[in-house]
Length: 133
Image (tube, rainbow, N blue to C red; front, side):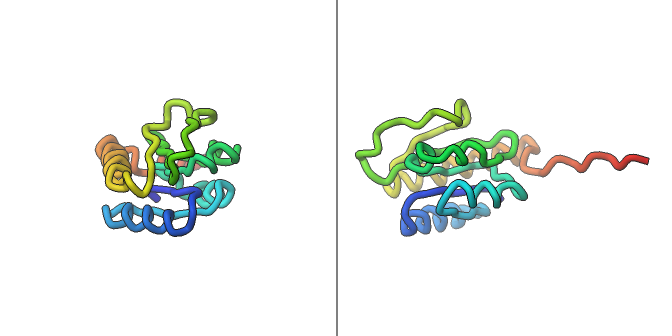
């Protein structure tokens, strides 16, 4: 999976999901961080797109596994969500966007993150450890 989208209302999630998929990326959307964490355990994403309210209220959001070189993009859907969310993510947050207005910017950022991972070879899962004789 390239992108995991967490939180936000259903219509906004669907719009973001369609935009990301139209860029040729594999993406899944989840209502909450717990279900995203469960799905990402088997296939960690390169980009995690999280609604600021979900990031603020759920400690599970910072526990969603990501592949090396991955990044977090926070989004808000109203202007009154101005408080920044930094705990739990540190340097992995590359942007805070206002959606749906900045949907094109989101698609460009996610595409660049995935492209960078492919160029550096981080898009492939790590090799299985050798079997003991």
